[in-house]
Amino acid sequence: MLRLAVPNKGALSEAAQTMLKEAGYRSRRDSKELVVVDEDNGCELFFLRPRDIAVYVGEGMLDAGITGRDMRVDSGAPVEEIMPLGFGGSTFRLAAKAGAMTSVKDLDGLRIATSYAGVLGKYLSESGVDARVIKLDGAVETAIRLGVADAVADVVETGTTLRNVGLEVFGEPIMRSEAVLIKQQGNGNGADAGIEQLVRRLQGVVHARDFVMMDYDIRAERIEEAIALTPGMEGPTVSPLHREGWVAVRVMVRRRGHQQVMDQLWEIGARAILATDIYACRL
Image (cartoon, rainbow, N blue to C red; front, side):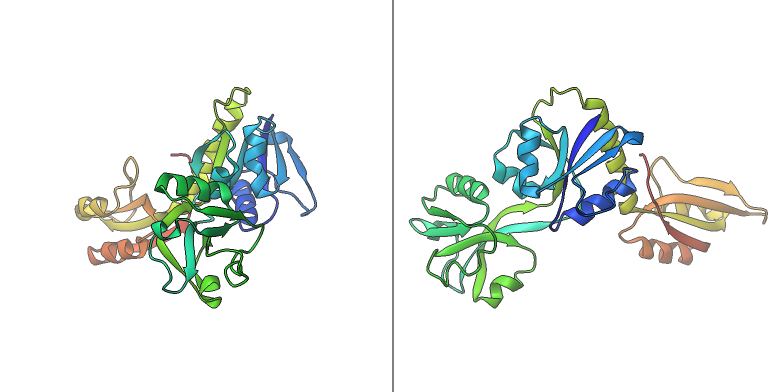
């Protein structure tokens, strides 16, 4: 039985549980549930602190897990990414008082507060910067004001929180993170079949979110123009209509920009153009 770690709280938790539910796995009925046994899918779901998931997976106690790339790297655990999951995006950046610094080189000999000491230490080493890393749990925005540090390194989504305390980001991003599916390096625990099924299902959810199903009717003599706009995966499904000289087309179209595709189809004579969500797929 596949043993899968799922974030029990935080920014990744709800999105991870939603994705697993769309992939056909059971979800917990109560936020206090720590383990859910899904007999139908041969899976046990363990709800853990996101920061601990990479450690459990790396030690081989669990077969796979969903966590953030930043937390995976910060843990230093012997795990590898199987696939990105397309949610929980964030950027890990350096910040200091407005106008005080412009690049990572300015940090040489200074103090930097962060909740991600592993990520920051690796980045400073690779950048050839000798700075003191101060590990804090939780928010680090006030570290400079309280005299604990000269700069901070933190997860940034919009930068509003930093600006509100008089800080600004500087230098290149340290890391771009998102939710990822991980497994133990080497994965010699015999769970390959369960992981492969999980990956196929999650890929199906990711693809389903990236595409819409488009249906439309068009005159037969213009079908090649329409197919050029909507090539699909292996090609669209084209069926004759009862109305002579017309055909019906069904095809997968990328969600991003699909409204423009509908406009272009209309301009070449397509009618009854519909775009609907795809719940799940296998490509």
